[in-house]
Image 1: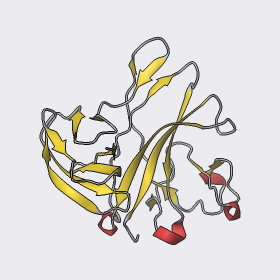
Image 2 (image 1 turned 180 degrees about the horizontal axis):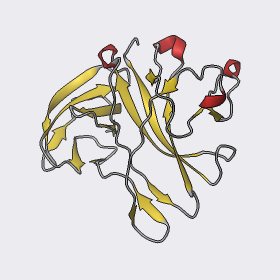
Image 3 (image 1 turned 180 degrees about the vertical axis):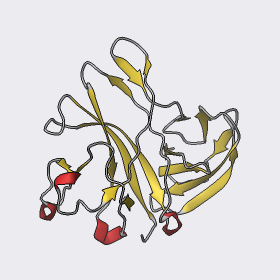
Image 4 (image 1 turned 135 degrees about the vertical axis):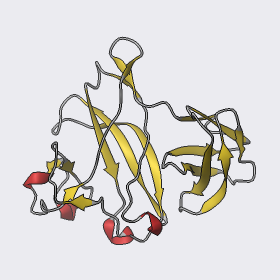
Length: 201
């Protein structure tokens, strides 16, 4: 893996799968470096969802073109514990629709994607996943994190994967971002959690 790029963890909503229309609900960018090769990434992602509209949630990893990054999701020989699907926007892959991975000629690759979460009813037919958030977002001067239960070390990366700053933060502290130029950034904690925020004057 070359590093210096990002993949995304994405939550889609649909009322039928795999043939239904996938509507993107939330996405979290995960910056990667070459040192992340052969590691397991923990990515928190949250969304408020109206279950009457989207009774089915699909969790996906959206990756850049392999030829430009050398990235692929890790594999093992244990087989899948639940159905998994692959799709691609590249016409040469012939996977424009989600296709069960076990039916593909590359089925010797067993992709490692473990999804875990919890649902908390907010109101009728709504549920909530996870509680870690950055605010205000967008912002011009500082950001604060809700949901932290302890002091955490962090690093801030730009969209090219370049480290811009680092420090320590708790739920009661603010992170000064005045020196950053306008744009999208990723706040990565030592524990593996990553949040996206926008600097905008």
